[in-house]
Length: 186
Image (cartoon, rainbow, N blue to C red; front, side):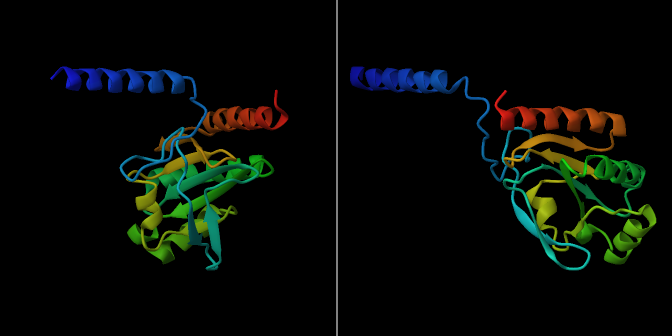
């Protein structure tokens, strides 16, 4: 009995020491598990989806710019409200931000999605989630849902619903500044 208690105490002391040693390492990204949302601080899932001309585009992983991934559907009126702001953000930050719209095609009609893109005059790349795997992988259950992913492939922001263009600008500016500081080492 005494041996069991001593072993339990040793295990608890070692576990406490491990927690203490790793307490300050908040910059290291945690890998997203299947049960968790891809959320700030976690690695964004990587995937490949076809665009409107069926060319495959890779999402996630390391890249040179910030990545904004916007999940939407043509029947979603908040998505319609947000579309002009997404286009404006793409135009404003095109040299420092990649923006991809992912249509939840498995929950939408592709013809209507294509009409939406034309009506909204969207110029940024639109990807088609025909089998719903991207929506499932990113655990999207609200439209629109937008993620901002840094150049290391780490989710920095996850927004469900619509926020103003000025709020997006503040968020994007913040993460552009963070990335520039990381690259210059200041």
